[in-house]
Image (cartoon, rainbow, N blue to C red; front, side):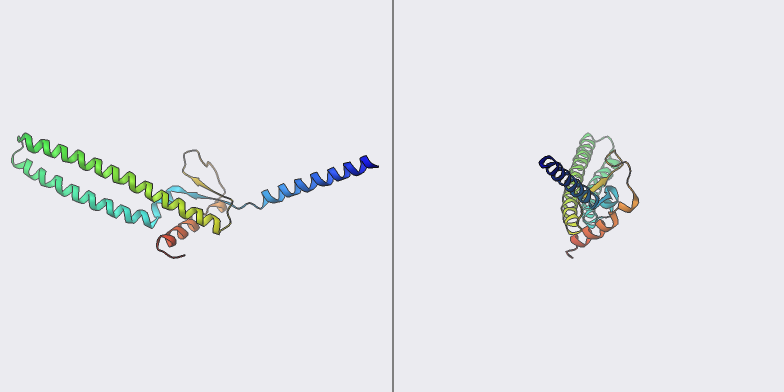
Length: 159
């Protein structure tokens, strides 16, 4: 009789644990975002892109000025050397700013996505980049638009 009670208790315990595992896994809220879409439509990106474009315009003006002098005297080695050095410096500056701004944008997007996930009770939000991270997802799980609205409202200071 003791063995029967022990076996019954064990079966009930295992059934309860199994049910709890099943019920927890079936209530997960998951979604994915299209990284490129989110990045390209984030208002913070547009702001930093405008700043980068101002630097590019300033650099273009510098190069155009040197180029106009070079057109007057194409054999002037000093002017040619100055143009080449300025072009390299401008390209380096623009690349460094672009890399810095991209890192800042992703840091801000990731911060907002953490808030978005917590506020909307997501267990997982996966990123889809088309590089093997997420090869397929049901479109019903795509939360890109909701996340985009959220992160842009956070960027605008709206809660």
